[in-house]
Length: 100
Image: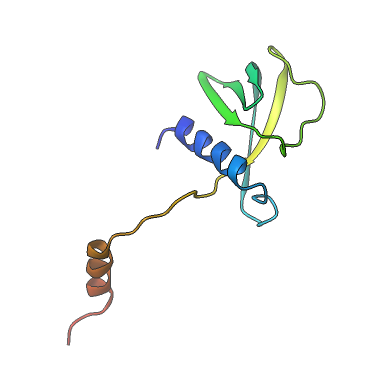
């Protein structure tokens, strides 16, 4: 999966669920140069990739965050929505239980 998509999903998840860190999920870090700062997003240059991490009013900011500066962002990845289908569930059940 594209790392940008993963980062955007993580950021969106944090924006919608302020308790992500309290849940004890695995956290990740990215360190790089700040490319852009808006009230809802920080873009970071990590190697050759541009990563956009969403922020909201509950995001803890410390130190100076400005374009050109170096920052470290800690984030978590949480699902926003999970959909299953009955067809795939039935197939998995038939594989799990062998027939006599």
